[in-house]
Length: 71
Image 1: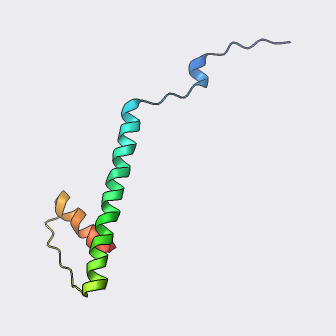
Image 2: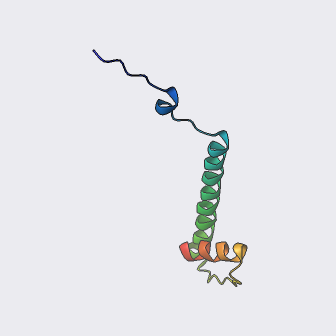
């Protein structure tokens, strides 16, 4: 019979609280993106609107352009 010495650190998977908060923030951002796409899509379908989006390819305008393209 052999006896193995086990180190708990090798068995237990730890999660940093900051990682959990980051995941929840990423879910909120994804939900906001999906909600914005749904709003723009409703304008396109219900109002027959033609959407234009100026883009300087900075962070904000690029996200806006991606929302419009997804819709």
